[in-house]
Image (cartoon, rainbow, N blue to C red; front, side, top):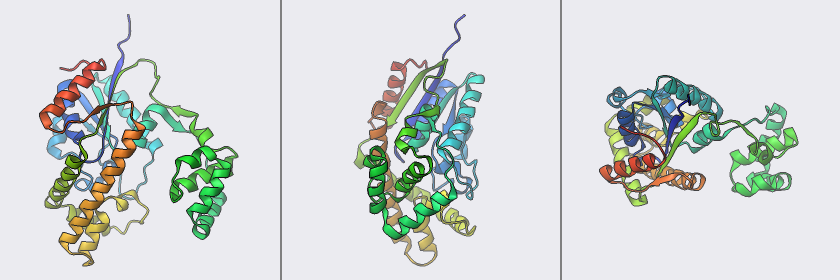
Length: 319
């Protein structure tokens, strides 16, 4: 007897593009389990500001990996991918459809393609790169990286401090360019025996519609208590490098509460940053997942119809 293939759905898209609504619609039609692939929605501290599903929405279908980390924790693509694989296996074991949804493209890519098994970098190497980055600036270290790992440096902007530092640390510590390590990922689901069909959907609505929706949603967040949520977060005095402290809206709403900005100015600034964030996500996801099926409509009924048709064309059987 042939073992049935294990289906999987991946839904990517920029913030406010309608991912959660489509995932919930699909989960209700397919006995599905929704698995979070948004880095900020992992954190319990930011239900409102990260646009996590409401308790009412979570009651309509199983939701996994939402609010599972404390604000003081630091996640990684490797940690998330392992946690997501466990939830996917659990969904299959329960004869449910795993639906992985989020805008953190690196998480989705790591899940499917695997993680780069770079050895731990000695602290002495990290300290040296940090010191030289502070003294010389990113352009100088980008030029050094161009000599040691031209393939990687060509993909990085000359002022991208974090990624330049990481690539330089790897080549200095291991003697191998990061681009070589990245060519040998391990542990991805792609090619896993028994996997399939896999529905890969990316939401790419009209940009004007997306930006207007970002504005409306941030206004709704304010009404839902985002400012109180930020006040509670700031009161924890977490280190500034924690991901929750860098969430869009935290800095602006904290400035309002500290009397540094008016309420209207803070909301305008946060909404503007949300649009910029959506633009960066849109560009990155479109470039990285160009082979995924794109849903471009934004009328809800038409979007659902197009979404279902695309999934059915990939071999997924829906109720």
